[in-house]
Amino acid sequence: MEKLVIEGGVPLRGEVNIGGAKNAALPVMTASILSPGENIVSNVPNLKDIATMGKLLARLGIGFQFSGDKVTLKTDNITSVEAPYDLVRTMRASVLILCPLVARMGEAKVSLPGGCAIGARPINLHLMGLEKMGAEIHLTEGYVHVKARRLKGASIYFDIPTVTGTENLMMAASLADGVTMLENAAMEPEVVDLANVLIKMGAEIQGAGTSVIRINGVENLKPFNYRIIPDRIEAGTFLAAAGITGGDIKIKNCNFSHLDAMVIKLKEAGLIINQESDGVRVKGPERLKPVDVKTMPYPGFPTDMQAQFMTLMSIADGTSLITESIFENRFMHVAELKRMGANIKIQGATATVRGIPSLTGAPVMATDLRASASLVIAGLAAKGTTVVDRVYHLDRGYEQIEEKLKPLGAKIKRIR
Image 1 (cartoon, rainbow, N blue to C red):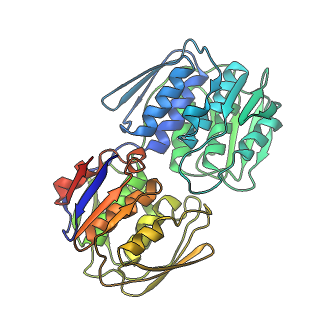
Image 2 (cartoon, rainbow, N blue to C red; image 1 turned 135 degrees about the vertical axis):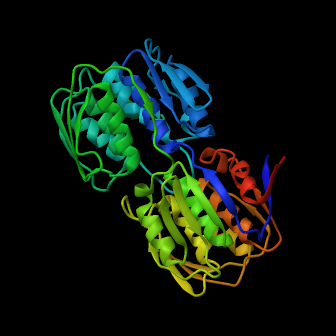
């Protein structure tokens, strides 16, 4: 098992390039199922989740090739409609093959999904939408079995915004008969990116990026060649890393408009953040200011930045309240931050963070993807040595993060 060893206390300085968004790449890859032919996705990060999705698509009979930052998917001959437990259990995004398979093949059998242990994250809203579109659904032995000769347009209201639910049903509706309305839809940039791909394939979609999306189903779609958006959470993680170390870095290849909520809160904490012609410049303060945060669906403060922001607040000059409204089990990093000296108390969905002068290096264990990132950030700022264990979680969402941190001056290395 691999670990990261970090000698903290070095302000980060220099430039860093942000990779493509994993959470955009995964649904775009599954969109290839909708049409026979050769599909090309570029700006794809080399991550464990991308490889897992590639294995899953290959299991369906799809040709998968990953070279450089480019994924090629050949979807002429789909030979299976089953997504087995051994692959789906490791990555919740596997459920994104469900609707494309039903839309094109008329059937899908998908194991109930897994992924990070940060909450239940059920797929009931996906199934509710498919049922309204005329699909027959059976749950047996841990699998969802869906059949539909041809999906039909429907009006679908989400009780809560769901990113994967919006993406899945948007793909289903693209090949359905008639008009589908998705209301209270997720508005994340990754949803818009998928809509742009589907439109390029010939889909008729309006309203992506708003809470109401209208899809007029078409008879068939064509293959695509598409470059996905930069990863806003990776960009936010480097903003936080600069802030907590009192650094001065330029973040290149990121979309500043996707960072609004993060930038507002980080500026309140004392960071100086400015958009420049070739990127975003961020400078950390001598001492961080306390800031209250509540995670919300986009365009609110992202749940995927909650752990990183809490780490900043752990050494802020005062007390902060951090409320998690998206996932019910996303404070697992707190126990590890406490090992480094952080003063954090949890009551229900709110963490009270009383800032201390500095964190102290310690052996810590990652419990999920973003918790891993928060512990790396903590290690960069801490006095002494921090060893982050179980970094396979980190590798699900960050492409060799240590190799991006080293040129910025970080003393970090990966060991077995």
